Length: 417
Image (cartoon, rainbow, N blue to C red; front, side, top):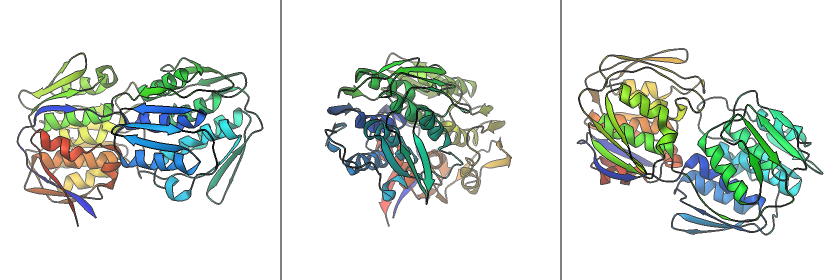
């Protein structure tokens, strides 16, 4: 079983190139099932979740080929409408193949998905959208089945602006007859990236990036080449790595507009952030100051950066308050940070952090992807050695994070036990 050993590190200095977005590549890989031709997807991060999605595509008949950070996907024929449980249970984003399979084959059967244990993320909004398009939905023995002789465009109102539901309904709607309207849609950059890819394939989608998306169905889609947008959460994590160590990092391949709420909070905390045309320069001048954070759907502060900012606030001057509004169980890293000497108290969905002068390395466990990143950050400035277990969570979402950190001065190594 692999673990990460993190020793107290000097201020990180140098340049880090940010990989393609995990939360963008997964729905776009699922969307390749919509075309009966070859698609080429560029800037793909090497992640465990990407490997699972690749295996899912192959399980239903696609042929895939890797070439460095580019994948070629050929879906001339689909041979299966059911995804295997052993793959779907590992990743919640597996459910994103349901919309494309339903659109292409008129039926699909998917096990209820797995993923990080950060709270309830029901798929009922996905199913509500499919039903509105005319699919018959049945659930039994842990599986969800959808059937439709023909999908018909309809108006779908989402009770919550779910990213996954927006993407799944959008993928089903591009081949439906007539117009589909998604109201209260998610506005995240990853939704826009998917819409841009689908439009390049020949879809007719307007309004992506707003709360109302309109889709006019087309008879078929073609394969195209598409480049994935940079990962804003990986960028934010390296921003935190520079800040927590008092370092000076330049992050290449960053769209700073996607990070506006994160940049604003860093500046409030007395961390210098300079925006360039294709990147960010982050450096510290003086003490980190405590600040208050409330997670919200985009364009608010992202829940996927909450844990990393908590590590940063744990050694900031003064008190900080972090309120988590998206997931009800996303404070599992608090107990691990407190084991390292942090002073954090939980009251419902609010964490109250009293900054401390030092943290101390010990054995900790990554309970989910972003919690694992938070523990790496804490380990970079903790006295002694921090041993992080269950790092498979981290490898689900960060492209070779230990090597990127080592290149800018971090004392971190991966070991197999």
